[in-house]
Length: 86
Image (cartoon, rainbow, N blue to C red; front, side):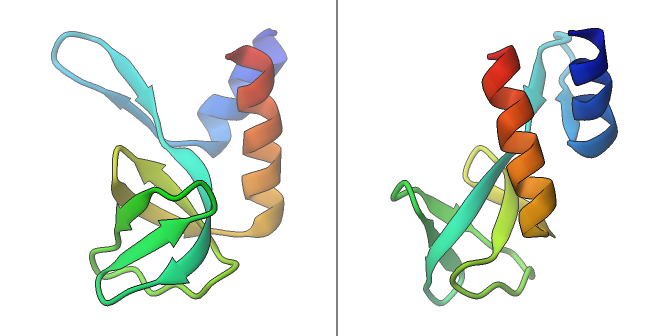
């Protein structure tokens, strides 16, 4: 378990607010790109900001905001790790 947490902390963004609640950004696969939003494979609408993506790309998402574009391998590794610890 400790090994998995070290992986998550090394490879994912971790947000801590003033109440010390932690939130992870979650990897999402893009299904469709609109003007300034993207639709994920689960139907979520994600605000892109200035991140350029195409269908099939992966994003780290916090809430409904894109944080960073990531590769497929990193996204799959993060999904596997998050599935084990949640």
